[in-house]
Image (tube, rainbow, N blue to C red):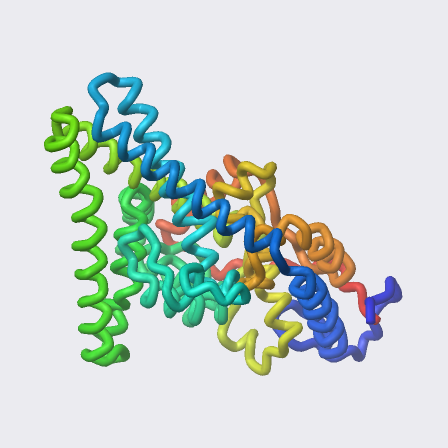
Length: 383
């Protein structure tokens, strides 16, 4: 099934945006399907223990951070409480919530850790996010005109996006979006532009707006009403520390999530695709597009954990419902497969990826003279 190193015949028919022949695309699909089946067959008690232990750890960090903030009368208590709560929110959002809602742990058949029941500590309701992220973004990764995550309908992040005067504000909009990322995602998931354009039914928009209002009331009540009141009643330490500490913890989580997510699709070397380029796309072509449209962040176990293993963004897009604790295991094999098929595998350290994403956003705030062509693939290893 594997490609060889022999040059491709000139008459080989290429299909899909990656430039693979139909036969190569079919082989790629078989290899990647087989790799997933191999890992899935070994899922078991240790994996279940991992997610349950992580959830327990996250809840302890959350409770400890909140308790310290409610009792904080000195700077050290405030700093420690804010830090622990910020880490707890990062873990819940990235490694737990994001991945549970993706269905990565549905195989456990645990109703408490299931994509149908989990509601994360994020202003955006899980149901709306599952639609825009799981159903739309992962299906149409980096296809301009279909993947709404290309710019989140407010930013120009690809030269293929038609320039408009509003993109002059690319940098300030992104600078505002970063610390309030959960709010940006919540409004994005409402699909306000789709509703105003008449493409989203009024009933669906009202349903999503109601869900957003309920979620907002619940989380704001917990973070900015219940905590300060509890501090006043239980510890008489005042309301300022719980309010400020919780706001900072949410801001830390938002800045981190924004950085990780933007590193996944906007650094140099990541491709975008036209709707025409994916016509007749096979499963192997889809796999290739996920690889070419994503980027990894290099780092160690702590980076992988705090990023929700989106440091393995390529593996996540190839296997979105595979438990995230297995991405580090499959990453070297996916990278080796990519090398054999001539598929670019983009990876780099966090500071470089973040810098490239912001540089792209700055450059594309101005008109571009033409479209940047998709990179010429490496020498494709044919059969």
